[in-house]
Image 1 (cartoon, rainbow, N blue to C red):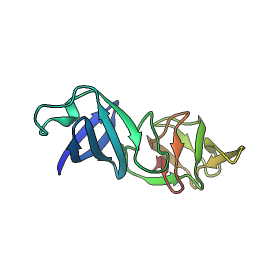
Image 2: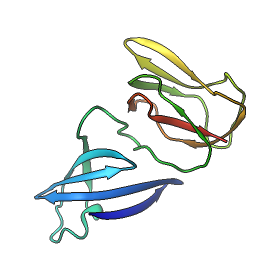
Image 3: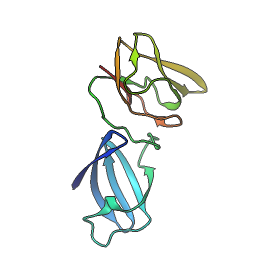
Length: 143
């Protein structure tokens, strides 16, 4: 297994290349498993991350636009149930108060506000509008 560290738009990603068979790579991005279809499969398995790829979840739906990334310290605010992110109400650096809305999650055709559990500063935004999230998946981090 080969591990890569990426930093994209200030977000850090830990990518483990578990295996490559033809143009399909089995990867783990920050703990979430994906099957990645590579348009230009590498000649040698040593460079699979360099090829443009289409990400397909291996199991339940997970964030597609931006895989979960840990870019800041702090306590995670997690999804209480699986659903789709309709709104992200904060950005990195925002000061928040306990009970302040940080995101809106649609689950079972209902909109659920996700609130900050305590006062603090947003150190990481780990999802984008339209992302599918699983129960207990980190949405933002607050320190």
